[in-house]
Length: 277
Image (cartoon, rainbow, N blue to C red; front, side, top):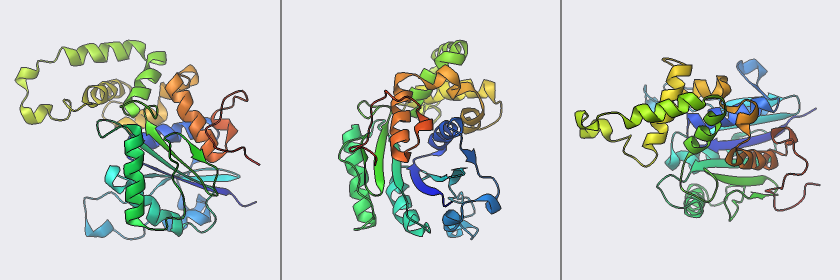
């Protein structure tokens, strides 16, 4: 039986780890060996190195998650500017009909969620006048397509914020003490002893929350990247996957992928603009 195919572009590695963990919770397995990869996605794996003749540039291979009947390519774009371009290039390379195309980005301080969606739409048109998919007019909505297409603007399609807002809500369940002590530790830092360049990132709008997440993950996975902790630790285990903002994202992901296992609640509302056949 041929697998259904879905593609999701995200801004960075932490977003990919967050979504990947939700997919894992729903029964998907990450693909580690190329021989196990859904053949329709094979052209998404770059074969040249160094990529674009840049020895320092990460090869932009997606993370692949699969069940026996569904394959999802989860593609970190490396930043906002590459989000639309990554999808416009990748989707036509997939050898088969893509059932769902999604985008996940942050509101942060770069405009309201609706403005962020408008910017993404404009850049998609810049990259390709005929992208093969239609973006919704409202953040959080999933157009029924085909292909289904949806855009989720973190943290909740309404307010300014980032993935870290959701992660802090998750941390309160299993890592409440760590969350509180990390916040206290960061408040107690003598910033007068740090240079302007030292403080540049933590003084950004999302900086303190990113630092708090980093502090928690440094305890859980010392010396390892934050995405390793998101993927492996209890950030999204049990009740930690049920804060309101996380449930809203799970509902979006469920409707985008048409995967009830992502949010197995028959009474939950739907983000899709029409009922599935």
